[in-house]
Length: 410
Image (cartoon, rainbow, N blue to C red; front, side, top):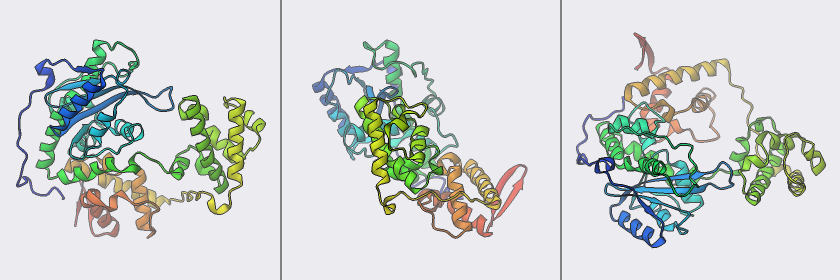
């Protein structure tokens, strides 16, 4: 067991804060750049704030921000980006390492800071992620989280609303405020529980990923292997697919359309498989819906890739030759992982996915170095359960089932 002492020596004071809803404070709507700067200056003085955005990305190349929500214990503001052109005061808050940014499932909101604001988020506390390290519930919705941790019921009725519409309706304003208004209280509740379980350092380690570029960027190779059907491509086919991804991105930017609406993934893979270098051949493919100029760009991309020397082709993914024994062992270790997480109040989904378990087993059984670092070999995951799984594989620990409960013994 890795719970540590029941009570840490030093604890944060358990101050009681009123919820904004109880204070009946209406959100303040910011439509002026100077007013936004003033609000952000006030927030910076308290060194912690809740952050969220509402954005539209269904019909755009880049997400279009429809609203930005900020909250502290004393104020809630909604920033209208259609009225305030300069959002840099907000991005600078998110990127200030001396100010804690509290979010819920905030990866996409933080990504806007990185891609549109041009700065790296710092000092992030994601309540959804942290909650998965003190309970078995992950991913947990904001409504369930507030109900569970601070006994507040939210009524989320605007999930499909049009955030471009102006003026904002009272329901939209209430929904936008609710996304941040309770996060400071939720954050404190999680902090108290993490101290009880001696997991504050685990959470800090997990949150550090939000301040690394690789969290928001994918390598060209990663983009290729994520294509459905890319596993059937040879090295040259992967090189063509890699080039076509760049062409697709450029065309999507020109048309201001979502990337996959320009060329669907399966069509891109089909072009890469056949390596067509003539626009007329590509045009015959069922589902291609671009103009003649775009067809020429696609064909030119295929031609560029075909001219690459073999040494510049992406590596072909290894054949999935998992044996039945390895598959069975991965399932067994997965059961041990889930049982241990249940006993220790940690989400098994946050600790390791099925793909991670398969890679872990393969590395151990075949004594191979994995192509990518294994999460179970480092940090809090290794301390929590990685060593236990290693001991099970090596035979140092025995699995016992008693009354339906799984336990591991030396």
